[in-house]
Amino acid sequence: MYQVDNGFKLATKENNWDFLNRFFKKKGISIAKEDFDPVIHCAPNSGYTLLKKVYHILTGKEVYDTEQELKEDLPDYAKPTIAAKAKDHEIDRIVDMERKAKQAKEMITTHN
Image (cartoon, rainbow, N blue to C red; front, side, top):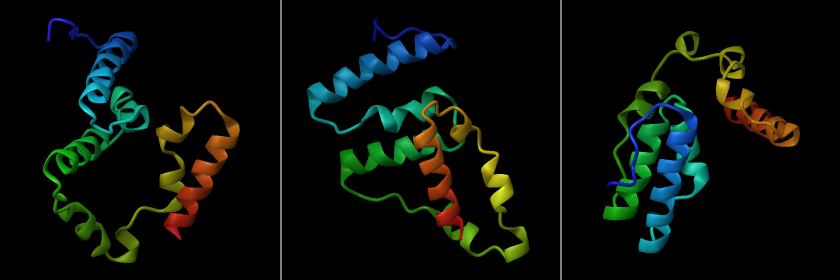
């Protein structure tokens, strides 16, 4: 734990996660950069998603997700619109234009 640095700078977070990634690989835990990169950038629900994956890897059990069920039970007028989803800052931080377009197209397809 002496190698983990407390800090809020992006470089500090990346160094900490690189250290953890080496640990995961050494122990045979399949956590990739795509799993923890949203956590580094403070994406909404990214920590929860990562914790669910870690829990599943360590225990072999799935997390009972009531949040998804609540979203499905909402009436149509209360569900998020595609315009609200299109303003997602996670898509904005993708540099590669092809990947950004693919992500946006996937978001529209899943919304429909």
